[in-house]
Image 1 (cartoon, rainbow, N blue to C red):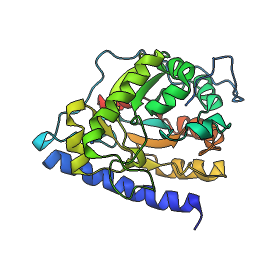
Image 2 (cartoon, rainbow, N blue to C red):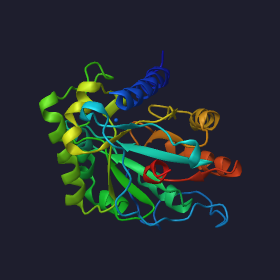
Image 3 (cartoon, rainbow, N blue to C red):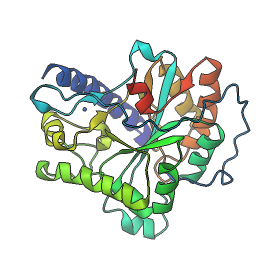
Length: 290
């Protein structure tokens, strides 16, 4: 089985875990080039582009579940209408510094430039280690009202055992790891930072939800898996997203060139086709507000 097939199969299972986490909570959680920078997308009509929104003060969040568990958000309600949130994980694990120093790129400035050209409001789930490696780009994303930065941990270590082979962080360090990421964003100069958190690999359990409660974040999962990680065929990624998106959907993608090299080309097709269907793109904060 290819890495892409394994990713699609296992991450789809994680999506199911997100549903269970949401129910459990209810019952008991990329690099920025300048606008004149890289990107080859054609200009779009202002009548079809999503407006560049101002970042709302006090972004919405969900109330904790029973026993103070961190709440989990997976998709919008029917009130969201024909909206869709594209989210991009800016992954960099704490121990990948030597790989970055040797030339591996964990950023994707041309993807961010494309989102700007197409006027697509988006949420970037960023690791603190990524923000430290690319502080200028973190600031560029985090000061552009088109985007919002959410927390993807500092280390990108797993919050449960057996999560795609990621190193595992101890429960006593989980809240501190999330806090350290927020500090890295602010140190880089990012301002559009929202109190949302995405578990590395999407893996979590009740113990992890309990450990993060002091951070007062809302955990954000997804209902549409793009399958862009390790993919080599952008049309396969686009086909998967276009087949699964529904009103209020939340799509998980990546803005890490070394691990998701075809995401930009997939987005170039996804955005106009969804707009043709009448969808409007929003950030997670706007989707959660409905």
